[in-house]
Image (cartoon, rainbow, N blue to C red; front, side, top):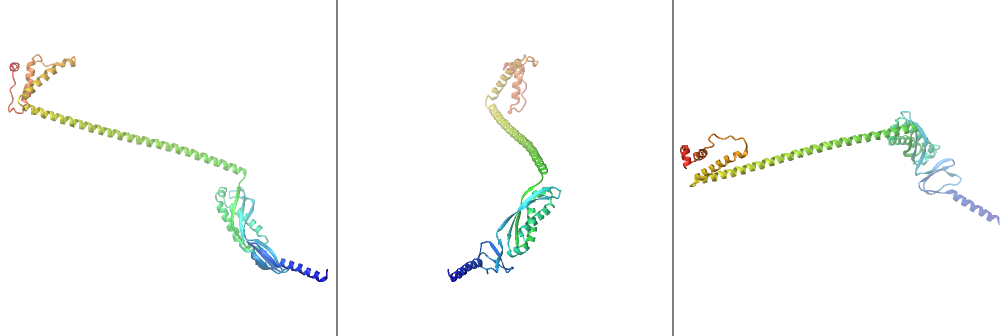
Length: 323
């Protein structure tokens, strides 16, 4: 092999190495920091980029994606001197590759340490029960504190989430007993409320039943009274009609004689039934003088005759018998 061919081959190798060193392909959502002779020169954007070999070098490579970062578990002391084992996850994103490269030696460690110290400070201001209730407040407080400091590091803290809050076993047992007592209390209260509502329902039902019964009795009494009134009115009308017809009959020829005869018959029949009704009899003194009694009854009918203008003299017993 001649010297010319060797020289050509060396030049080709150097050209390939030069091209490989000069061409940089940056992936999407990434940013590369280029230093020229040890000094910051440029930030390479995604795609094909050309640099000067052996003069420019890629010093830092940053991902611009959102990055989840687990924060180590640590023991925090609450305001009421209770120990809590707390760990969480932090979400951040590089927004300024230059500051992320030169603002701190390691922004991941800086963010982690700041998250832990801020978390201890926030929990130290709360009581144990509040730490379980105010997780959102704790998360917001940690994000606010870290985000303010992380601006100089070219990092944006998006959110922080607590994964576990673990108190000591003794505290867990006491909390479980408290929860059990609260549930038993709610059960007793619920049972008493049920009995109370049952008594209210029974009393309301009895009251409504009594009202309905009284309304029914009232309506029944009204209906009975209306029925009796109607019956009395019908009897009165019938009696009035009967008396009217009797009056008309007495005005006809022979009407009074018929009336006198009817009265006499009923008078005799009434006395004939006296002995059948009772063993004790109260009889008039002249009971044996039947003719005189009949004459007395007939004279009453004649005295009530509307056509008579003067009192009719009482007939003697002899005249009554003769008639």
